[in-house]
Amino acid sequence: MRESRDPGGRLPYRLWYEETEIERICEREVAAAIPSVDLDRPALDIDWFVETRLNLVPEYVWLPSGVLGATEFTADGQVRLQIGSELSIRAERHQDSERLLRSTLAHEAAHVLLHRILFLKESKAIFGGSASRSELCRSIGYTDPSYRGEWWEWQANRGMAALLMPRRAVRLWLRVWERRNPRAKAQARNEEMASAFAVSAVAARRRLAQVRALETRA
Image 1 (spheres, rainbow, N blue to C red):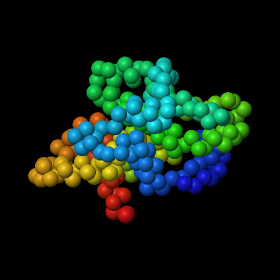
Image 2 (image 1 turned 90 degrees about the vertical axis):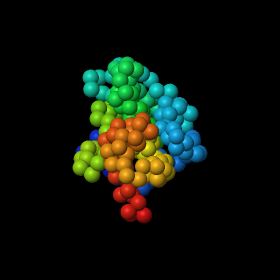
Image 3 (image 1 turned 45 degrees about the vertical axis):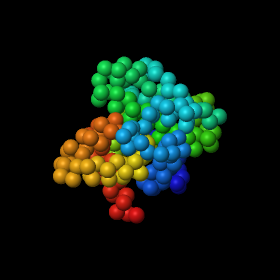
Image 4 (image 1 turned 180 degrees about the horizontal axis):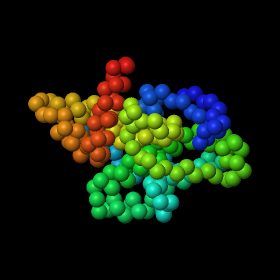
């Protein structure tokens, strides 16, 4: 990880992570919480992970229109992880919203894992004299090569994918699935992977592409 000044950006400092670094950080945290992979139920209990590994209890609150989640950092190192109440209510009724809720929790968790270090500086440039700074997240998604969002959100989205679909778990699951379904089409694979990891089919497809791209660089 490298740090540089970014006077014209969202934050006065910018962190640069290699993709492999994000993968290692997230995989290490998941492995510390869950040492072995259950291929019958590989979906991470993200609520449990946030509470037990990050020692944070998500707060379900009313957030500004269009905001799915927010992470509030304080100058003394404390963190508040907030999720929109509207999303939480929708998640009780619709599977797509439930999966978006999981993604939002993982996205905010990735902010904590990757970006908390910035706020431990207690920098006046970051806090501007305030006791805390809250970062609102409107767009939660799975990054693909065409994504051109802010570095802060790109990293959180990449971390989210690595938390919900750890590379090792994806490899193991895929190996077993291909052995059982040697003639199945890619769409069927994506749908079954989405169901196994409790994400969308698009997320499963993009994550597979990420994992395979990382393997070609190894």
